Structure formats: C-alpha cells, structure tokens
Image (cartoon, rainbow, N blue to C red; front, side, top):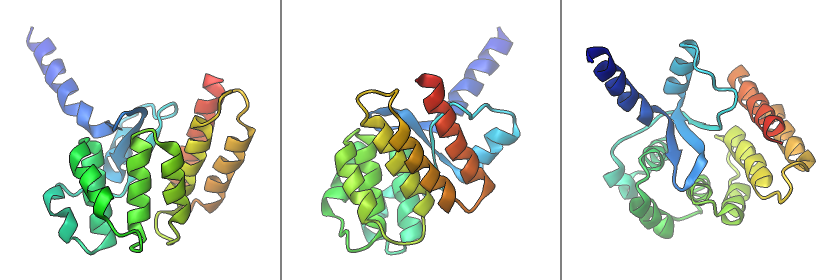
Length: 187
C-alpha cells in the first residue's frame, strides 16, 4: 500500500513537467532543463511532440509590465504550460506585434488553440534571430497538422528539413528527427 501511494504521488508530481498546451493535446511544452533531465533519466522522447522553451517565469500576473523579450517569453511559456487561457487571451488581444517576440507569442497561443492558419501568420511575421528554430519547427508542425491526407507529408518533411538546417545544437537536430520519426510512424 505504501509503495502504491509513493508511486501515485510520483505520478502526480511528474505530470506538470510536460504540460499539454491548450486544446492541442498532441503537443507538450517543456523547459530546456526539464527536457534534459528526462532525457538523462532515459525517458523516451522519440515519439513525443515537445515544444522546448528556455525556461519558465511564474510571475504571469505582471506580464503586461514586462519589457524584456526573454522574460516575456518565459512568462508566456509558463501561462501556456498551465493553460491560463483567459490570461493568454487577454495578453494576445492587447499586445503590440511591432515588438517582435509578440508575434511568436501570438503564434504559440493560436497553435495551442489549433487555430493553425492564425498561428502561421504570426510565425511568418516573427523576424528576429532568437527562437528561429522554434519558429521553423512549428511552421513545419502546422503544415503537417493541416494535411488532409497524413500520408502525403512530403511538404512537411521539406519544412522539417529547413528547421534541421537552421538548428544550432545537437538537441534541436534530434527534435526534428523525432518529429520525422513520429510522422513516419503514424502514417
């Protein structure tokens, strides 16, 4: 009985590590640190669709006051992980997309709501160098999700190749390879 209780609590505490985003249950958001921890412990990430962000900031109530793009992205990532839908909607409806990070944030919000065409517009308008890998990866994901016939995934593979080509770290290359494995496995 004691062992079952311990396993139950372990399960409860491990759930938030990979939070599903919005209504889009096919994808999970995870911090870089948590992802690396799971990989080092042997967690099989090959068939999971992770959106990996640098980190989280739990001070989401102050999001409208934040001016630093990295802090803003960390706060929004936390809101996305915790599915703070009303707070995200409020921020997205008022944010200024001239501040480039807001294009990425809006794209992530719409992606989480499976509003892929809206997300695509925002991702394509995000022009800064930071988070370019994430942008290209999510554009490829959107193109795959929009396919009527999932067996016809050639364009998605080309877009994943673009994400692979701009990746700067080995982990990013692995993520793209895992997405491709996921597509081929499911098709």
